[in-house]
Amino acid sequence: MSALTKSAGSRKNRTFPEWLRSRDGQRVLVMIAFLVVPLVLLMVFTYIPFAEMVKYSFYNMKYVGNRKFVGFKNYIKVFSRDDCFGALKLSLYYMGGSVVQLSLALYLATILSFKVKGGNIFKGFMFFPFLINGIAIGFIFKFFYTRGFVFDTVLQWVGFNLDSLPYWLKDRSINNISLVGTSVWRYFGQNMVLFIGAIMSVDSELYEAAMLDGANKFQQFKYIIMPSIKTIFVLNVILSISGSLSAFEPPYVITDGANGTGTYFVVMHEIAHTQQKVGLASAMAVVLLMIIFIVTVLQKLFFKYVFKDGTE
Amino acid sequence: MSVKEKIIKYVLIVLKYFSLVFFSFVALLPVVSCVITAFKTDEEYQSTNVMVLPQSWLNFDNFINAFNKAGMGRAFINSTIILICVLLFSTLIGTQLAYVLNRFEFFGNKLIRNMFLFASMLPGVAMQISVYEIMYKLHFINSLPGYIVMMCGTDVISIYIYIQFFENIDGSLDESAIVDGASFFTIFYKILLPLLKPAIVTSCILKGVGTYNEYYCANLYLQDKTRLATVATSLYTFVGPLGSKYNLICAGVIISLLPALIVFITCQKQIYSGLTSGAVKG
Image (cartoon, rainbow over all chains, first blue to last red):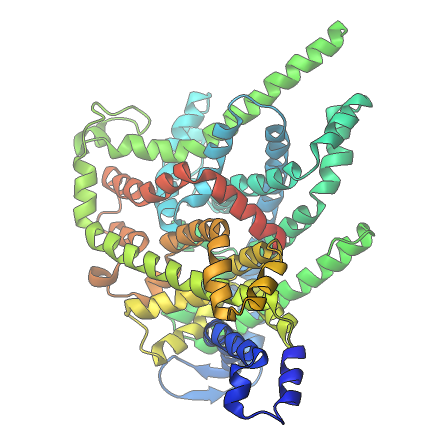
């Protein structure tokens, strides 16, 4: 506030070039110089597309050619077409996956926060999947789940019979769980690193004091670790729920949405870029953004209410 | 310590290491099986189980084949160009933005911060529906510079890392430089930017890995796969007729993840700390 008002006030008794050379002028100049590019990029690649998308959702249109205003018809279609809204049900699988992922990450982070031989190596092994590109993951898991290949072989080692095993990517009763598994595989190490970071930020004297007072590991976890990672835990829960709703990569790269694995975003991608029904796809995107927004607000309120001392 | 306590202690230790070994195995198994298969000849691949070790660990034929078939030479050049440009450009605008947001109080400061925060909540795949139209109008489709500009424009996390770092640099440093007659530009380039080096390294590694691995937009906007493939999108070559030659595919996959592996081994600490600081702030 101060920069703009001050400069406006002092401009009266100075010529413009003089003002430009003054401290105030320099301030405004540097602000403009440093803000223009990032803000233009933000506008061009985020906010203008966002506004356009809302607009498109009211039209029947392709990328090229005529557009026809259809009001809320696209929105009605989103809720009535089976392939659109029905696909959201799949996100329940991904939510289940993120519960597994977060608890696993928390468990391993707790173990690794205390003295462990070779802790860094274990941490590195479990984190590395996060750094692999999505397409490579697609190929790795197509290979992994192929009949008689890696997963089946390992299961046979521990005594399963190949004939009793399902086709992991084709069988509709299990294929979504297989895909969720790849997502858990990819992200649990990253979640774990985040949790370790939060746990490490606790003053180590606290643990020593707790130890002296005779607190066991479980009590340490409950009274020292849990409170200290509350913020990052809440953040992770929020991220994983909105992540589940917008699950995209595993089905996109592994099954291409075949055999009932097409999540909402996979269907949306197909409608937008293959069928070119841009209006309908935009309506889908807007509906999902609204759901994510509502869920985020609800969660924040919920956690504010549960932890009364306020986690942002 | 009583016997019972001792037993509990040992059970816990066993459980601890069992968990670590088991989940490390789970994390590594898919990648390791790929490595094993990548060293097998066609004949070996067809006749042996996937988990049987290859006869020779020096059989690099698949790697050479995959590299040539997928045009990975060209892809590595493209990815390197993209990486260098995106990192230079986004570091420059990211640090500048963070400098203004942290050091200057002005009307709209909070608004700009919130705009970037809100932008980070919008899922990228959904946004591409309409970004595609904009890219089309700007003639950015099938254009390496166009893709680079777009990749610079979508960065949010590193801005947070920089702002957080600026908060820890004492403002009196700027004040004394101003008293000495330095301009804001001098302060930024000569004094603050060098101090920011650790934050720059951290966010460049994160952003670098992200850029190198990005494939959705690369696939959408760099459609000319012979000329403009990146390392990630070059792997699409193996979709289709080659789709069942897994010894070849695995070799390609391994080649594509080597750079990430090397960066990971050399910069583990920065990656962990970057992730943590980015997440806490975000």
